[in-house]
Length: 238
Image (tube, rainbow, N blue to C red; front, top):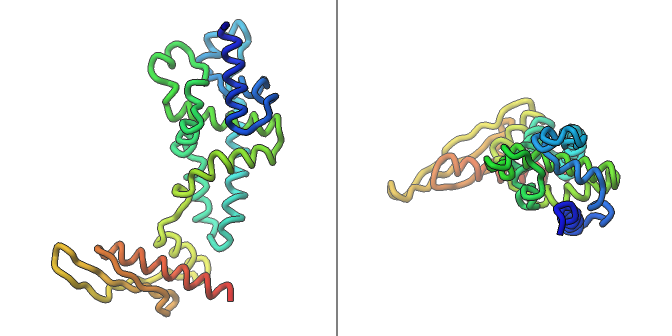
């Protein structure tokens, strides 16, 4: 089997695996999305185009899709926290992790130097390939298809990245609503030194909002913040 035919079959198989139309697997956009600039540079005479322009577009499309999803899923989270969540989800680490899960590395065409030094597993190359792939889906199948792709293959697996520390989330929530910071206090500690249990409360706008326990003061405060968030949001809905 020729290398060209093997490549075509591999891209069609990728399209099937990603639940995208078979025609997408034969598209010029998909082929370009998986072409690194090191490969294109070595084949400049053949006018091979790298994925850099698609990466630029994919970055913007991905940002909109992620922002829209976070806006809809977290109606009570203020802008600052949403921005941090979005940054985590569109950052290199998260994108490279998804690219690895989708097994994009072996499909990215690399120049000889990049291939020899393990470029197929380099986070920057993987993240760029995923951004370019999002752009390819957007151009060929439209925004809604790109949104489904990102939801199914990226966001559904990255919920832990988007989760905020309860203390940070409470800080953002309280600052936005009351223009004041929450106040934590240790209320008790018990048990032997090797198995200490701490108790803490958090006060919001002068009112006790939550309490919690943990094997350290920090964990007790985190538990108190988690309870406070639940109580405050429950009160907002009533």
